[in-house]
Image 1 (cartoon, rainbow, N blue to C red):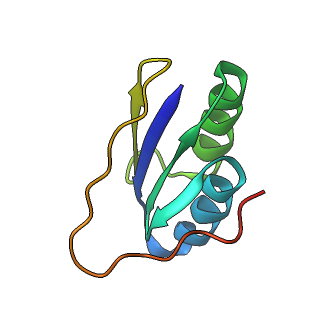
Image 2: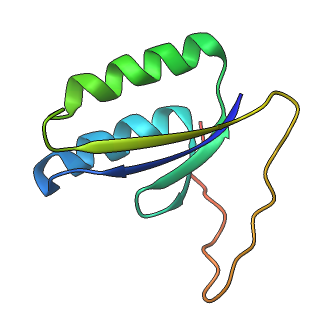
Length: 87
């Protein structure tokens, strides 16, 4: 699946969440990531993220897109440079 992930965490957990997201997805903007994940990768990603979060406070949103589709992205304002830290 192709997905967009957005997170909102307490500052002390933000760096761990950021590192976890970078292992699986492209860093698009601050706490926004996107990319392709297999079903197995999605399950590992979810387990890894949930281990870092305080599930009573932190929040992660995943917007999955149907297989074979890639959403079109429109950008206004300062365009972020392409990520250079992709695995």
